[in-house]
Image 1 (cartoon, rainbow, N blue to C red):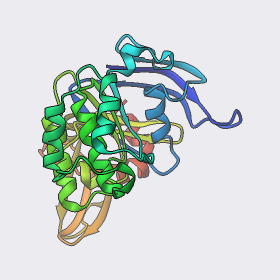
Image 2: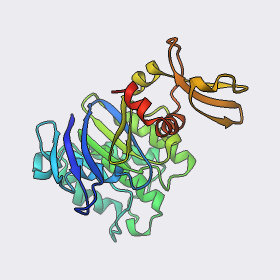
Image 3: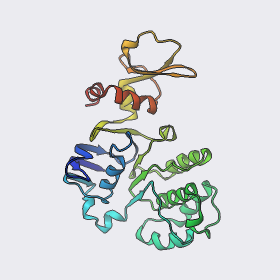
Image 4: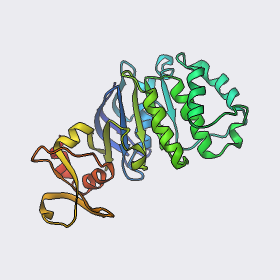
Length: 278
């Protein structure tokens, strides 16, 4: 679905945010995009969405080049930014004005997603809604557009605990085999049991890009009472239940992916992770 070759981009000529990035992201998957502040997550989303243009290299979304901003590409793409705009119009008016740009938009699905988020009054003005409620309206609208490519930047920021559960529910309802979703977030636990693959950016490039299955085939995530063989562990940290750790899965054991531990382990063992997942 998304193929990136030798991508370079910088807001200043003297420093690249992304450098020689090569990446493939499949459709039918929800890809979790992680990284420290300022590492280029939002920039990567904007490049894929055609909001900023590469300095060099190539991005392809199916047959489209995002920087060309063709109508057929834009009508099958929805981008949810972290910073939301102020609009002095009602939810109904927003939908009427914007749904015409998305040929697959379903008003009934939009209304169903709003119900999941417990939003019933569409006569409210967006400007007067809380940040979290605006997020829920735009998430509902984006999913109802039934685009093949969904780019979400920190979608769960501003959502309360019940709304985060509702977010996971509506995301799974909207997914199809033709949909590619990329979610950038610092809220690692919000994506638990939702994403299909993990993409970690570090130091202008990709540190890890692997499916959950690939990760759990190569790594074992566990909890123990005491630290017994630290040299075998890639990373460990204290938890209320004991010591959480990750190590190489040399014995083909089954375990459940822990995204937070994975992220910390990857940053602590960059060369090892590149070797394991090259």
